[in-house]
Every structure is written in structure tokens, then in C-alpha cells.
Length: 353
Image (cartoon, rainbow, N blue to C red; front, top):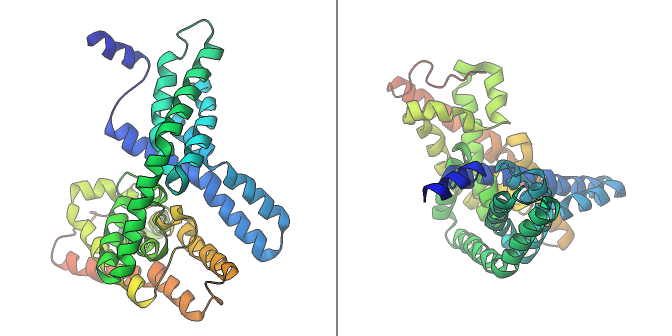
């Protein structure tokens, strides 16, 4: 057993929740951003502005989604070059065969293929043949065997959440908003989770509300400590920056969480806010305004398909209120209350910017 552990250590194969559940998942989200998400944005801009070149470029970017995710995962696992490049075929196969749940299929299959490739890498004199062969054979083989089932399972869970949200928008608005919002601030990827479950529709709107509550909430609540730099770093960057402070004093997390529990059902019950753009946008909040762009692309898609007659003033008001106004006001008020109660003390929200 010691020899096996020593071999795995030498091959940089470290089986851990952090490496697979945090590092690989976070990298997969970046692969999604660099392909599906940016491709969707380009496609929407091209369609709206009548620029066919943008539409074509966006189409090519979107078609690279599976490969981009798999390569990103391999990069996070520190795969050697031959393994990394071979994951292109693995990602395409897993994403294609996984259907709507493709991202989850890519995550599982790419991790195994990457580790298998690392194990044989540079172990023979014909590494140029052996490493790509093993990586692709294992990856594509597993994709053919597992991806449809993994994709169906992820899609079923996502559909169940979306169905439940349509059925009980108030209760599920709270649950989805709070859980996805918390995931966004934790060192895991809420965007990748939403993409893996293909979380769109009313549930996607609730997820967006929860993410915005965390990002805008922390940005405004900590303005006293962090100023304009902190406002932008958290408001259009990530609330994950507060994770170190949350570990020191978990009470600072209460205000954004409570806010997400309030804005979630407002999004689902009052504004009927739906995320019908790319599912990954549901877990992005206000990061680079990707969440808001996702909602807009969904509107455009719904208009084109006849589901919407047009974008109304109420639609815009709902998006702005849920994304910016309500998270800022509600979190600020709760933050002030908690400061008076002594739950939040001086510099508890201070970031090293």
C-alpha cells in the first residue's frame, strides 16, 4: 500500500474533496465562461446589432464548450501537456453524450481520464502514443458508458428543482436563493453547480437573486471598511473575498443570507424573474454583470420563440430591483442592526485589498 501511495504521490494524483470538488469544479466554471457563456453573449449581441460575424464567432465559441471544460479541469489537476491536450476529445464526447446534464458528465469523466493519463505519463519510451491513447480511451470510453446516465440524473434533479419552484414559488424561492447564494460565497462554484443541473427558468431567477444578495450585500455592508475598491471587488467580482472573515466571525454572513431569503421569493412571486439564458449565468450574480446579461439573452430567446411579446418596463424594474436595489438596501439595514447588537465589530468585514 505504501508503494501505491508513493507512486500516486510521484504522479501528482491526490484524491481529495478539495481537488475534485473545489479546484476542478471551479476550473470547469471558467471553461464554461470561456466558451458557452461568452459565445452566448456574442451571439446575442450579434443578433441584436445585426452583426453576423459576431453570431458566427459566438457559435464557434459555444461549440467548444465540452473541450473547454475538460481542458480547464485537467489544468486544475495539473495534468501534463499530452494529457491536457488529449482531454479535448474527452470533453467533447462527455458533453455531447451527457445532453442537458453535460457539464456534470464532463466533470466526472474528465477527472478520471486526467488522472489515468497522469498515471501513465512518461512511464514508457513511446509516451507520445501511450499517454494520449490512455487518456482518450479511458475518457471517451467512460463517456460512452456513463455520460448519458450522469446527464439524465443531473437533468432530472434540475428539472425537479425547476418544477418544484413553479409549483411552490415562495418556499422554493427561499430555498434555492439561500443555497445557491451560500455556494457562491463558499470556495466552490455556484455557476458550475447551476450549469451541471441546467438550472434555468424561475429557479434560475431565484438562484440569481441569492447570488446578487451575497455580492451586492457584502459590497454595500462592508463599504465603511473597504471603500470604493471593496465595493467593486465584491459587487462585480466575488463575495468569496469575505470567506476568511466569515471563518473568523460567521455572524457577518447572516445579513446577506437573510437578504437572499427575502429577495428569492420576491423574484419568483412578484417579478416572476426567469433565467432563460445559459444555465451557468444563474449562479453568477453580478459578477461582470453576467447574470443580468444572461437574463437579457433569455428574454431575447423567448421573444424569438414567441414565449414573450416583448421586454416590458416591469421586466427591467424587476431585474434591477432583484440584482442591485433590494440587496443593497436590505443587507445594509440588517448590517447596521447587527453592528448595534455587537455581532459585527470594527474591521470584521475588512479586506486586504
